[in-house]
Length: 226
Image 1: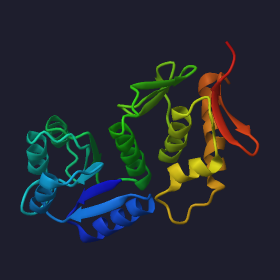
Image 2 (image 1 turned 90 degrees about the vertical axis):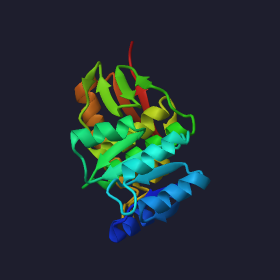
Image 3 (image 1 turned 180 degrees about the vertical axis):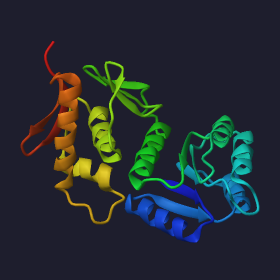
């Protein structure tokens, strides 16, 4: 899948390009708003990652012109302009998501994956497993409507499991989805996050929702009991 990265900060652009390429995505870059606008006139992308403060044309103008042409390509706004007014304006102009700088790479990973998944028609508004719910729009987990506090990595692991609830997910598959953008991650790191998630799910659900290890197969998120 091709992604258009519109970012005028050279070092950040290089870093993000490498991270996205490591996740097996094809990345094209534009360093200013005018070039981005020209590309978006003629090219289709699975996702656009768009900075707002750009030379030659502001990112919001790029977004506005893109939507005015009827383009439905998903757009993740990535910017230091993280104030409420800017976020509201960007979302009203047609941004699909908004991530303020500085940001954690794990959160960027999760948001990129969610937007790509939704753009491919794999979206469901709410996924459930027993009393555990995952709102794919707000990207929030809750148990019986009480928000579940998760770190970005815990979030990514649990998201991968609830999407395939009732199915065993191989450890290698979880690793690819959670750590694809990390060079020095170890496969065994998955076990750390599974352990942490089990404790949080036990505390929230009293054991009614659990992650089961199927030896040699993978991990299974399941509801237990009546």
